[in-house]
Length: 199
Length: 294
Image (cartoon, rainbow over all chains, first blue to last red; front, side):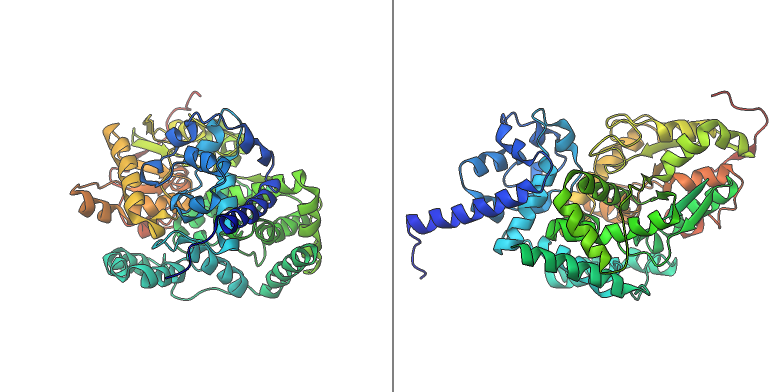
């Protein structure tokens, strides 16, 4: 069995995570407003998917304040957020909740901490590698790969409308590569390079 | 009027009827729609989950190309629309990110230093062309087809773009002026789940069932959408919803531009109506006799 982490170790991990999180928050307009949260729960109330979350949006802010970021990253909540921006336009404290959800997604990726049995993050990663490879997104290839990895049964259940869409020419069987994909790659490489240099 | 057309990836496949109908409608209304050459993916919400600034740099390539064309962008996909606008806002707000993005663009011999306006075709039809102009150009009128306009999330949020966040009216006005009976229903800006249909089907089926039921309960015969992902979720997964909940929804889901196109006298085939999974019944169009008062 793994050794139980000491209190110091847990504190150190949390401190590192808080530092990384604040770096993300600084990249959001008015990001520091997260400190103004009055815990009213409007975000949770307006969220169309909060009923399926293990931790509600309001609780996310509370956990962050309680310095329990790791718990947030283990929850499904940040990956269930469909980015509909309802919370963001309703928050009476002007907190950009949706953007904070994105920040937490990025933090999870940076720390390599994901909710168990819910690999939604792998879809985002596959998506951006498609952008690099083809310059465009290849929806169907992406979905098929994701289903094969997570629940192959879904692939069969969706086969009937999939075929109907293919017949109507609404699903391409091959990805399209743009002519100047080298430009897209150069942009991505250069942006990454600058970020590494700065860090 | 000239627009730099950015169809986006979805309009090349699942949203093909949207692409076809937008092109046809713009042509008939005398708008000059020029597709951005060799455009790339905008990065969508997915890139923001991995790396925000790099994602914005990718979408800035599109903005830079449009800057060279010297006109507003027309982006029909809600996700592209929001991503491109977000890139603009972020570059205006954060000098540091702006620097990174501009340096990255230099690597591709591109330059983006002016703010190119990103527009949705609904915004263009209502605010540039005008509802009465569209209605007076249309040779046909619908005879009271009951339509539920579904705006979804991204064209009304996160900031005010061109319509109200809670009770948007642009599509109501446009479709109403073409003789449709516009149904008012509370779910018109409620989320369809977007990519949750892939990552967490259970939730997405529930959300879409909610939307379909709400439109049905208010008497809609057809739902008009403005986004390829909403359209796909509502249409293609309807049979899955019926199976999962033991229901029998049979709601045609069309793009608002297809309905506008029909009134403009464009053939259904050219509007991609033949490629829809659920046929639109009762498309009773009559030649327009009197000019509609707006």
